Length: 106
Image (tube, rainbow, N blue to C red; front, side, top):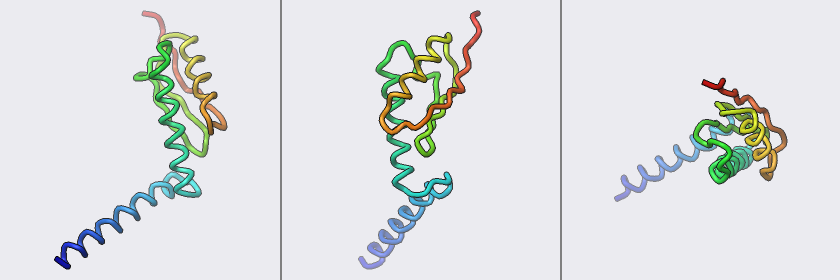
């Protein structure tokens, strides 16, 4: 039984060290900043899903230190602008970099 406890404790320690290491590899100051960025990304994606004028599956969202980067493809300039507008209104967003490309009409 002691071996199982020791093994479980070791696995937990490794998991905690690995998780906290994610923030360091992204160049952020703390795990809290990483969690905040993750919440911002999730919120932006959720708003894209709720808004039918934006194709949530065609646009990628990444957040670093409160700056949101949008990439992917939009059907037109209006969709591109709407995605940026939605992201700007999310709590905690400091800036938005809009790298969404507009697909040419076929």
